Length: 180
Image 1: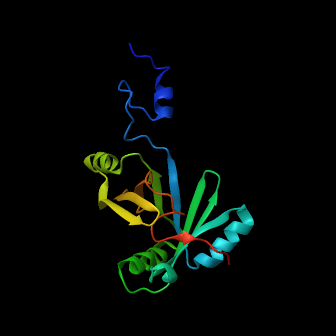
Image 2: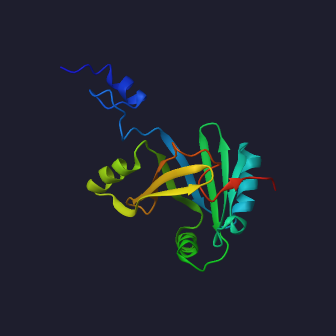
Image 3: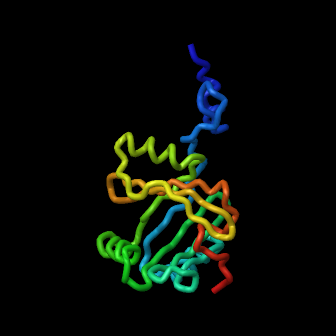
């Protein structure tokens, strides 16, 4: 007989049942919800004013992202990224423009924080998730982030994120937001 009263404690602590080791599938929280929008700057200003969110990071042509512009909005326990195409010349711009044409504005990606992206990715793909991007590491002066992306029915993708080695504003390529 198992002690089912201890299971929630193990899960809350992120420990694998019966091992005392960290559970590689322990989902800490949603890392970010990424929305595709027609005008990220306008949407960011409205979200900040209406919802009391704070813009904390930015990526765009000035930071090396020639095709898109993105604003990261934050509140305790919440991170929303608003992204829009600037110039449709490569795969990222085409993907975003196609999503907006097909669906209008809406959720593009649900990023999920996991302690081991490699394990979580293999686990999901072995059980039928569509592989969109195998695990890879992205670095900048703030450290490194490990990412992988899987697809699920309905078209929304899920990015698995391990930012344990990262101290930057959001992801490599983003800079702290300076103001409107």
